[in-house]
Image (cartoon, rainbow, N blue to C red):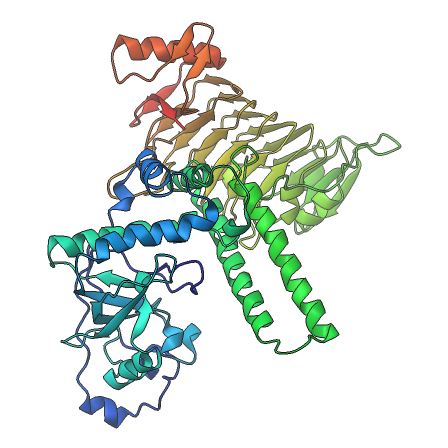
Length: 595
């Protein structure tokens, strides 16, 4: 997203830096909304189309490591700063670069709402115009940074048929002053402009990912320390430690907060006199919603509290327990039930037939069995498993397919003391959390196929999991992720084609088949598993940046040779990690990663 400072409205997303932006057409044929002035087809035929936009300087921050980002922002730019001084510090840094060159060429990327009435109907993220930039230093570094721009020749835009007159009119209304962070220098200019492009990149990243609207109200001893935590959060999202769907949810909530904040400011500014009772109530309502969302985001950002996204625990349903009479029921899930289907059940088995899996789960008490006959099913109640039940398919796993609800955040989530899923295929579509999340208690997966779209199987702190003779594939992060203090037994499984997340052109996530977070240490037993074709390592151990202490002293990561084998063996012993007769094929084996 092309970013502006904390007081500016967010603008639309940009394409990949360093690439030429191909011009597109905004008009009736492309489904675009009406322009801000009448546009007749006969007029358009007389006007020359805009040239495509030139290439921009490539962003360099994608290749900068998290540690180097901390050094740049925390040790250099914001060192000793309070939150209220952050804007001035970033402005001062940028002005040092800008004063070296008064005029240069760039692409102004702005919100389509400036040019079109119905911008939500326009299939483009931004309007880009080639401009000549004149930078005049403000009176003081705390002033809002603006750039004086004029349309450059040849007239160029990412919208081929945008009228030159419309662009001139918009710039006239803005007095030819636009937010400096909305301007991206064009490639091929001198070294000074290249330095300006990099400085703008640094400041944009700060306002896009590190600055929060509430920072001015924060009272913390070290603002740089707060920024360091946010850099770690950003790195966790980028490297797959926090899977992409969950990271997207965080960013979506953060963007929602920014929009709600702007709405509140706009609502307050529209109240000219003493507010009416209705206006006062509405204002307090908006403020309360903003405070609640702010609190949620702060919990997420606190690395000491963040375990599995900003909304833990997921399950708020109370456990029913066993029936008062001690009886158990077998729930048959099938569109129709025949005598042939139930001939193998004991004569005294209490049966209840459902054509809907959701209804069957809703009727369960602890001790019940759910038997699913071949077909495709959906069940939101799988995300709220609290009873000790067995859910099993009849037939081959590929014949009993359960598909997640794309509108739900979770697919299968359990906090039952002991729940079993057997002979099933789980297909994840659109959900944010792991395909299976064990919040607490114990879960068994036997002879199941898990086709992930986002995250794999997640075992949270204190929970335990047993997976036997099953297949896990397609996860964007690790196939199995063990949180601190969890326990898992994996035997006879296939874990493949996981960590399908492309981080950047220059970096690759180490996560692959199994990801272990080690403080406090989880316990893992592996036997006869086949881990293959995963991007990254077969088993990844994430240890804190500070070294992991063991009975034998301090473990440090070594690159290769006998020292590495000795390190891994000590760490495996400390982790209660048992690996017997496992096959790691087309992967990098086992790795220790500082986190």
